[in-house]
Amino acid sequence: MEAGVIELKQLTKKYGEFTAVDRLDLTIRQGEIFGLLGPNGAGKTTTILMMLGLTEPTSGSATVCGLDATRQPMLVKRRVGYMPDDIGFYDDRSGLDNLVYTARLNGVPEKDARERAMLLLEKVGLADAARKKTGAYSRGMRQRLGLADVLIKRPDVIILDEPTLGIDPEGVRELLVLIREMSRTEGLTVLLSSHHLHQVQQICDRVGLFVKGRLIAAGDLDTLSRELDGGPTHLVEIDVGGWDSALEETLLSLEGVLAVNRCETDALSGSGAGDASSDLATIRVASGVDVTASLASAVVSSGASLLGLRPTRYGLDDIYHRYFEGGDSHERTS
Image (cartoon, rainbow, N blue to C red; front, side):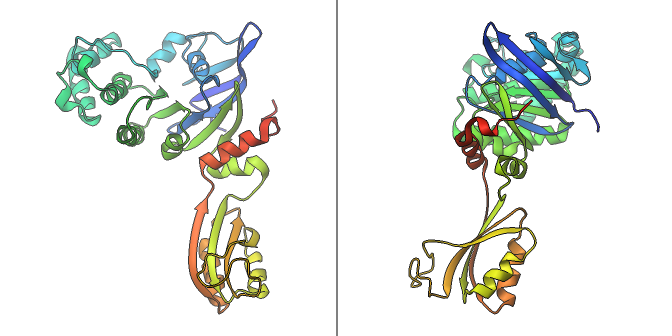
């Protein structure tokens, strides 16, 4: 198996008796956007600091772009762009000046630095504010400038620690779209740390749930749901006229279907809630794969009336809370 761009193996950080990060194993692949999701104090920032060589692990290892973050921190920093939750700029200098300064510190020639800075300011939507002092920038503008700042040295990996903190909803939406677009166009590997479920779900290819220093699960939404309890990953509600036991058996026989249940409260007008004798029914089908098309075809082929169909999937919010409801029973063993 090809090694990941980021490889964390049994990574542990202790402060006295307190364990901030506990035997963390994680691989992040080239070009993916990975969301490290967990509440404040879970150990996300401590993990990032170890990846950047800014704090030493108590045990285990962090490898970034094939480099040991503890033994080769300067080489790692050349390959990685890092945006903390509260990025600082020289407020009495313009956005352009700040970017050029960062580029020059990273060995980019003056002419190339200025050209690259202007290009990035255009990409992040700050071209009109390029010569405005950053002290007058809004929080959202500073975060956009921060994204340009981490990209100015052309990194292979960018690490964003709570990048949407303090931004209004529209600013959040725009920044997330920008991160995804720039990841794809620049070919970047992105690690995004956040405690906002919806934001992580919007742009991340995979998500890791991080609690009390431990990674309790990692994967895409379907994988997380399966790891949780082996349960279904897809739900479809169908409104059917002409429902009977024969149709129920037909739906149960479809490949991938795990359960077929009649809803307690009938969604169809005039059918009567919970009336078992009625042939009008709302049925919930749980499956391990998307069987929406097969369900529709089976209902129509049986001669019944398909009156409504509502496919749904478990969201990250559902999965997140179901993990915590399960407590330690869902934590990975090392």
